[in-house]
Length: 129
Image 1 (tube, one colour):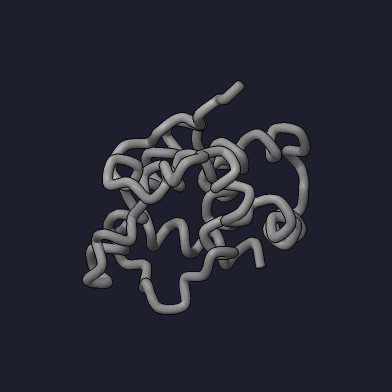
Image 2 (cartoon, one colour):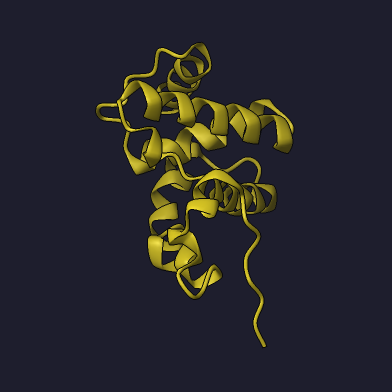
């Protein structure tokens, strides 16, 4: 499984990753692979640029979401830093429990994720209280 994510990351970087079949869990695995190869900010740029390209080549550039990409990369990097030698397949499978739409929406109340700005700019979570 680990080779799968390495191959997908290489294809993402080359602009040859096929959008069809690139699942949410594949996104997580490729992000882990990028974070293991690069510093956080380099990995973020590789993933963000690659996902924008995949969405554009799929004919759906509006599918790229800067805030979800930023938030997901932060959460993945934080978990990975706590357990840097974790098996990538186990990490990806475990992400089903904590990297969910509901968990991300909880960070951005009042529909912030649905705004055009959130799609183009990586917004920080809104702290209330």
